[in-house]
Amino acid sequence: MGDIFERLVKNYGPLGQHRERAHGYFAFPKLDGEISNRMNFRGKEMIVWSLNNYLGLANHPDVRKADADASAQYGLATPMGARMMSGNSDYHEQLEAELAAFEEKEDAILMNYGYQGIMSTIDAICGRHDVIVYDAEAHACIIDGLRLHPGHRYVFKHNDVEDCEKQLERATALIEKQNTGGILVITEGVFGMAGDQGKLKEIVELKAKFDFRLLVDDAHGFGTLGERGAGAGEAQGCQDGIDLYFSTFAKSMASIGAFMAGPKVIIDYIRYNIRSQIFAKSLPMPFVIGNLKRLELLRTKPELKNTLWKNALKLQQGLKERGFDIGKTDSVVTPVYMKGGVEEATAMVMDLRENYRIFCSIVVYPVIPKGHIIYRLIPTAVHTDKDIEETLKAFSETKEKLVAGNYKVSMIPDMAEKKA
Image (tube, rainbow, N blue to C red; front, side, top):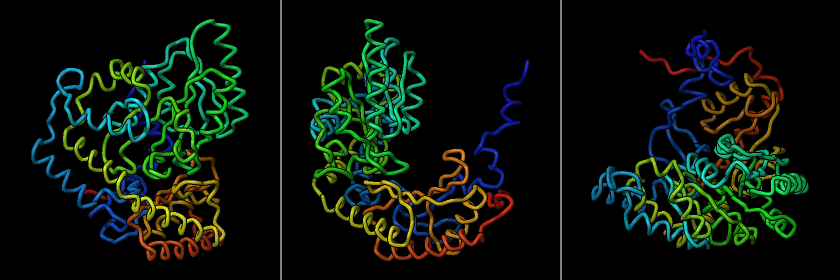
């Protein structure tokens, strides 16, 4: 019999194998200072493109005051217990009602975290005879929710509506053969890695041919897309065709928590059957009251979204003019695709941070295929023209170095945080 711990120590995984050189720099870095466009990393000021603080609400004075006042009045313990038992409040119900109205749905349920919330929702609403059809590039929280599903699931090629239809045909045939069960389609409003919007309108149109329900994870679209900021469904004119609309507060709201909105009878079912909420302490009052203020600003200050898009489009246009490949993004998420290995990517990151004072997230193998590098830049409403100009200059110069082979190293440099 083997020792489970011994096996783990022998193989830390594709990312963990680099921990001794990467921890505190390439992985688990520490940014200091006020959350903003510029923060400190290892004692140096950096232009930061790695925070999902889309609307700049993290340090908005009205938000900070609401958070502080609620914390002073209630502390972090109130309300105690799970919502179903002793942790409910008028404020929790008010936030749910306002979110439902904003998304033009009958009802909404608050969740402590987006990741656990959507996983648990899939578990709650899908039984062993139901079939799930989902996009191949769905977020990890959806994939982990699918792992909980005891029934069949069919994946369609990313944003390929024709393949989605093909999988719906397979799912429909299986349901008819079983003579029981239903179909749930899951996709995203905005895919957080590539920045492209999901084909929501086209998938909704498939309802004319197939009987299914649609769940959309719109974590990156909520607050950034649509005339009112209600998300990808609003932007594409198909919000009424989305049966369950999900988003998190961790992006545009710069907070903690999440919600699912939809028909009242279904949201009520989820409310009484979602294990991640039934068996978890209620979202603390300061977060609830703080999120009410954030939602108010999202609704009443369209200039925040307008500034975000001005910055995003200037950054994206500047990158394209300089010959960079930013893929098919039609959101503010800005990927930059390059060629290179893990070692080259880490050397390039070091150059950007140490010599250009640019801090951005990088994605390499095993998240994406070998030989490819993706920088994911997240513009916000608090970035400036100067930030964008300095970043474009840095990317142009480091790209030249990458092409020239200046970043070829035999191994990842040892930049781990040294502890006494």
